[in-house]
Image (cartoon, rainbow, N blue to C red):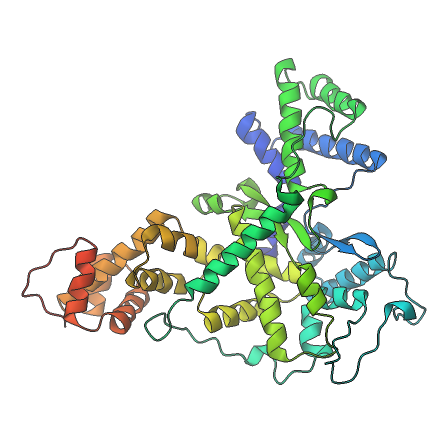
Amino acid sequence: MNSRTRNFGPMSERTVENALIRLLSTRYDLSCDSVLAREIVQRINKTLEADEKKRGIKRVYPGELYLKTSRGDIILPIRTQEAINRVLSGEKLEDIRASILDNCFKHCSSLFPVSAVGEVESESEIEIDESGESGVSVSELERIRRALSISRGFYKIYKMDHGINTIPLRAKRYGPKNPVNSTLMQELLSEAERGRENLSNGQEPEICNGDLFYSGEAIEEIINFLGNEAGIPVALREPMFWELAKLRARFCPLASTLVSGQMPLVSMHVKAGRRLDLPTRLQPFAPVIVTMITPGELEALGKKSRFEYSELMELHAHRMARVLIEAYQQDGLISYSELQWCFLASANRIGRILGWYEHKHNVMLPCPGSVLDMGRMLTHKEIIVSLYLRGLTVLEISRQTYHAPRSVDAYLKVFDSVLILHLYGLSLKLMAQVLNRGESLIEEYLQLIKDNLKEVGELRKYLRSRKVKLPEDVIAC
């Protein structure tokens, strides 16, 4: 398996179609590889899509960005299945991203006419001075372009002192000198919750009922297909249709239910961690709606002609952090490889931006690496222990670190074990053998002990808080 298939193959299988087939396999005893299940899903999707188009009902499909502009609403295809297939076939990522941007600008041309030389018409363009400090907004189309193309923003448009690849990402220890920024973590959670409340004016995405969103003809056509061609028993036909229609509506929300700047995605479900041995198409998916850009952020991108490099880093990193947290609050996890399609930047750049943000602000963000222990995302162990040493409860830590309470307690128990063996003076190799853990992990916990519990009295106090009793003659090595 080549690297492209390994990195992008799972994304190509996270589709609405596979999510609906999984529902049929779990609720109606059809096989995940059933030709009938796939035919049922394809027929329902095709029929409902044609019916909605005929009736003027507008949905936003996964990977599409919904924007409200001064000239009307627009839907931009960003993370498309076609683009994923192109990279799997061997095309260069840079060329694919450029074509996605060009396609988005073509969509924008219907609202923002452009001249033959490709510049925005004069009534849409507002000149500002060279310093970029006039406070007068640049054109609305230019703000959209800056929001979509963060890579170009860093390297070609804005003044900068150094490239992002020069940013060192040293492992930071979360201890007394570098306390976890629980305040910012709480602010990020609150912002994501506010975005969820704004969705559809505080209402959940629509629930299909009766013929509210589908014509009687379309429903009758599907019911007849399920009976006459698919051979579904009479008692199961309508329940099967409505369950599939409801799930489809969650993955593909009505445009009228979204706030400007939001994008639906088919995401890895947090429960996928229990079944990572399964092919991606058989794992559970989560329908999530994330806020790619807020109206305020879009406005901020138009206040100057040039920005300081640090300003853009902070803005785009905050956007990415919000997306990860919003997805997690909807039971979804988004990897850096997936995030690169949403922000049209390389996974390396995404990782460096978020790494810079986490290390600068001492926070952690939910992704498969930190929540499911995929990859070498190890700092969450340090954060969990550090937060506990600061007096937070397991439940409070669970909320701030995106881990289940029992997972938090499991990390603390390993730390307790290392601490006890350290008190008895065992060597690193012996600790690794006794605990059946890697030496690098043991070293991390020993460093935490060194940073946070320097005195024997502190060690004993901590263990007492964990209900561990030791003989009085035990001394630290």
